Structure formats: structure tokens, C-alpha cells
Image (cartoon, rainbow, N blue to C red; front, side, top):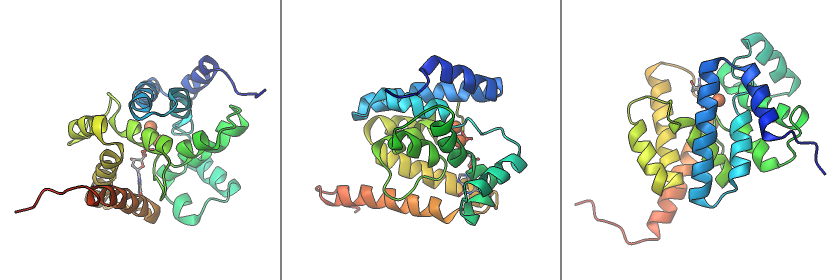
Length: 202
Ligand code: DGI
Ligand code: FE
Ligand code: FE
């Protein structure tokens, strides 16, 4: 037996922790992640669970995130960018507050913002669902939505490119792990496409 909360309890606790607008985003991520899970042969229950919890700490004040980052001994390159801390914090709380005992679910939550080298299918699904849920609006999101139907890895690789371009335009620091995750996703796409007959460029 496990001590995991049931989905409606998790949903209620998440709703209490977030603004109405952010909660609506989370609901969109849950639905999108479940759909992608079905499309790509992943367990939709795991996808929903990870999606419900992924932004649980998203609205914590920066000081609270910093203190928690120290407690979790997160690497300095993560801790110094406040936006990167809520995933690892939520992954920790998934285990200790929500009773999640599945490491793939915890990792999907932990790496949903930055990705990582060697992402699992579930990790990719949450990361991409976060970027394309119906409430998201940014240039190129419709291309990502249609690509997501056919190619999980390429859609996520393009999503990382868009995030990195956005960070460059805003002159924000880029976490090296985000770049490594992006390179690994494109390497997967190229390795796979290299094995197939290719269209010529000219
Ligand atoms: O929590 P969400 O807003 O739903 O989405 P998210 O967890 O993917 O991203 C949170 C923010 O983090 C988003 O504004 C983009 C930003 N971010 C992602 N990677 C990096 C980053 N910010 C910096 N400075 N560096 C990164 O490498
Ligand atoms: Fe997030
Ligand atoms: Fe999110």
C-alpha cells in the first residue's frame, strides 16, 4: 500500500496554493499531458499526477524558494535563478507532502523547467505539455501544438529553442543545463532522422 493522496485531494491542495489564473494553467497542463501520454504510450495517470504538482511552489516568494534551495542543497547555478527552483521544490514536496513514490513522476516534476540530458518519455511529456497547454500564447506555439501530435522529441527540442531565444532577447541568464538538455534533444532527433532516408537540401 502507498500513502499517496487521491487525485481530487491533490487538486484541491494545489488550487489552494495557487492564483486562479495559475490553477487554470495547471488544469490545462493536466489535460494536455494526459492526451500526450495516450498519444505516445505513456501512463496518463502518471502524466496527470506530475502535471497537478509541477507548479505547486510556483508562487512562493523568492526568499522562501531561496531558503528551500539551500535546504535541498541545489547547485548554485540553479539556486541563483529563482524561476528554476520551483520544480525541484515541488518534486521534493511530491514525495513528502503528496506521498508520490514513483521516481519518474518526481523527475518529471523536478526537471519540468530546465529539462535534462536523457529525459524519459514522461519527463518530455510534462515539459512539452507545460509549453503548449491551451492557455499558452506566444509566437510559434501553434506550430509546437501541431508538431506535438507527431513528434514528441522534435516538438520539445523546438520548444527549448524558443525558450532560449526568449531568454537571449530578454538578456536573462541561461542555465547551462537548459542548453545541454536542448542539445541532447536535437541529437536524438538527428540520430533518428540520420538513420532514415533524407530529403536533400538542394
Ligand atoms: O512555471 P511555468 O511558468 O509554467 O513554466 P516553466 O516552469 O517552464 O518556466 C518558468 C520560467 O523559467 C519561464 O519564464 C522561463 C524560465 N526559464 C526556463 N529556463 C531558464 C529560465 N530562466 C532563466 N533565467 N534561465 C533558464 O535557463
Ligand atoms: Fe513551472
Ligand atoms: Fe507550468
